[in-house]
Length: 334
Image 1 (cartoon, rainbow, N blue to C red):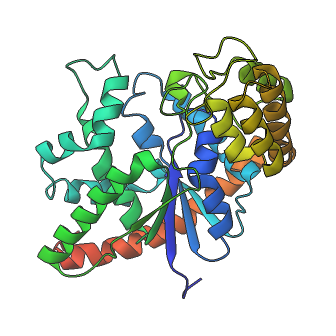
Image 2: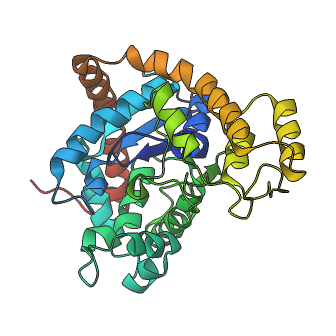
């Protein structure tokens, strides 16, 4: 591992992972875990920024996300999975970084703006922790000296903010951190089942990795298609159509997809057939994940995996913080 470049990526444990997570970041994580020294963070502290009044949701989410990650193919022998709240060095580094970024810069962050709009409960009472989210994320990445960060497209502004913080830290205190680079998945952003620009747990427009075959069927049958296409004989629009976006992302039978597109555009296939083919493709895609998921049902096993990963992350984080304190001329006197 010593000669391998390092990945840091992670998830806010606020519920099970969905297909958007999978194509946005998780498939890259699985693919790269042999090539990189991979650290995967379960960001329970950050999850509390907008779930501070529901800590049990976050605690349950830790195990849901961990189980889903293992089901996707993350190997705990190859990747270090750890719990954010159990690594206090992250909080320490977040405090140091808070002096290197302005409030106005945080408020201009496009992802913070978008997520604020979704949090109607905040109105004029946004918690400081929520606004500080990008600073905390910068600490997550750099506390293990992450060089590559597999993320969904919506997280790109956070990675750019991390790069800014790193440049400022290095310019003031000397070079300690590499500037991390983002790696976006093969599908930059998967639309929601309702046609919304983003699949999101908070919008209830997701297909989850844990969904049964029947749940997938029910959800796909409710999916938005071309709103102007009333009859199967009407010419339909393929571009921007959620059903075909999902076909392109998950249906490995590309000949079938192209045939459906041609017939859809010329009014020779109905929505039901297009959706039935998508249901089949999605279930073929999800079946191996379901099988692996069943192997990690025991909470004791999940606890052991998380404990071992966190011990390793703690050691790495403390090594980094020794360098940080030295660079900042902060010496422990007691």
